[in-house]
Length: 185
Image (cartoon, rainbow, N blue to C red; front, side, top):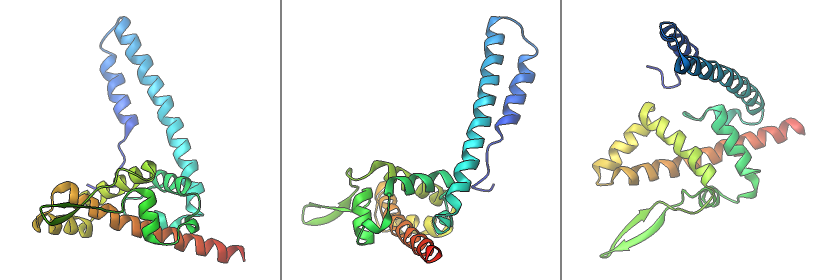
C-alpha cells in the first residue's frame, strides 16, 4: 500500500447509498440527506485542497519534497512561520516550534523531554510528518528502531525524529526562500 494513497470517499458514499436503497422511513431519509451533505463537503474540500496545492507549489517546492509533507501541511508551516529568515538558526526555529529538547536530570542521569512550549501548530504539522515517516520512510523507521534499541521509549524516539525533521524543514524553507529571492532579482 502506498503511504500517500487517498481514501476514495465517493465510492464509500455510493456503497452507503446502495445500502440505503433497501430501506424506507425517516431515519433512511435523514441518512440519505447526510450522505449527500457529505458528498458536497467532500467536493468543497477537494476544490480547496487543489487550490492550496497550486498556491504552495510555487513558494515551497523543497518543503513539499520532504517525505510526509503534503500541501496542506506545507501551507500550515509556511503560514505559521511567516518568514523563515526571522530565525537566525535551525536551533532558533526548533525553539520556536517546540521541538528543541529540554534537559531533565534525575539521579545524575541526564535525559531530554519534549517541550510543551512554542508554536503548537507548527509542532502539530511536524508531528504529522513524523507519523507518516515513521510508518512509511525507511530512514525514519531505522532511526526510531535504533533509538528504541538504545533504551529510548517510543515518545523519546519520536521527539528525536521531530527535532531532526525541524532541521530538515528549516533547511527546505531556507532553500525555497533563497530560490524565490534569486527569481525576484
